[in-house]
Image (cartoon, rainbow, N blue to C red; front, side, top):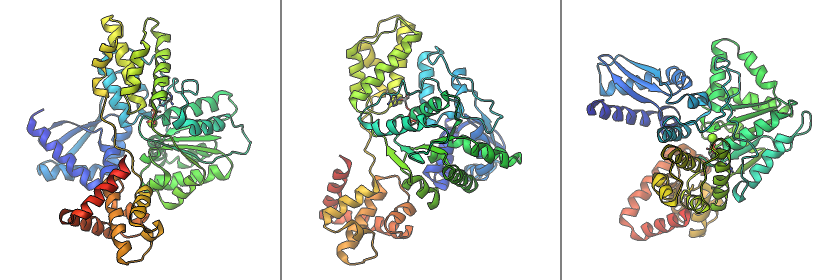
Length: 477
Ligand code: ADP
Ligand code: MG
């Protein structure tokens, strides 16, 4: 594609990002690619049919106007579904997030069509809006490695999976949150497999995308009632990646379903990349209902846990490729250097396997260093929470956290409050309205004012600049 077209496409994406906001953009548009531009239309593609219909239904006009701002002659946009790179990946596409697809592509490239996964289950008929999202049979309790960061989440999930129909449920909903690649999907699918195993209970696993898709389809076909009935007819509802749930009517539906299930003693299990209080697009009632069960965070995988995961991956691969062997020093090297997430650990093993199978060379430390170089990233900055910011700022300025949230306007609390708001904006991904809400229900303009004020002050007041730097350091190590 011509450079000029590429530049234009970047600008269109930039416009789109600023009109819809970062969260929406990354949920729906991060995977949209430009295919070509013709006289009157921009042709773009997305990886799933779901994304295509969602974008067409909700964002077509906005996408078009972003294009028209760059190319006034364009009359329409045209969206197609990209054909997947390899058939095995297509099977699971509905259940995958952007990150999954990205790493699939890497693996796809590295292995040139070698089949590593082996045993993917066929997806439920995708015309069946009420069917479960596809499951990956490798993601079971047997292959889930327990370590310090996930002991509690694992125990709670086990408990849920072992419950029996009619027995009172202990934690409802069970809400697990963690960053990307830390095992949420693995744990949820394990619950689904184990829960369905006896044939006694009906456990339904849905990604939030699939939930919305099912609901939208049902509305279109006027079977919304049947959709609700199906959802309410199950024993355990498992929803993955709840942060992607969007749209007023689907949220209302989700809220009803949640209430109906919980009130009738059925179990709900949810995973998301943030705690309920940070799910900005959900309304307060849903948030508090979610927070009312057991909320567990899974922390980052420690080195020991990473090593165990690697060993378990190698063992699984060896069931298909008996000749594949990774010496312990190589595994230790990988566990030490790939600190980021579980997906990269899996990617690393896949690459070693590909290299080993294609070249016939045994796996050595030297080869491993070469193959996984790009997976070794500098440490991700720590996730900073607004509560931590408030706590640290309050301590530093010797005021209480409730002073920061209060409406008091005396100088000794106004400045710390502004600093805390400024840090919340710069160190977290939270929006201005969300920050306002977390500071005693203030308006977003108040937050904006505070951010601007501190920005201006740190440029001329070196003491303040140093204070702010110190606070940042305290919060980030
Ligand atoms: P998330 O859904 O949190 O983004 P996944 O569940 O998809 O993460 O995990 C990413 C990869 O890391 C998967 O291959 C998964 O099997 C592996 N993984 C993560 N945590 C564990 C664990 N505790 N034990 C075994 N494998 C794990
Ligand atoms: Mg996941």
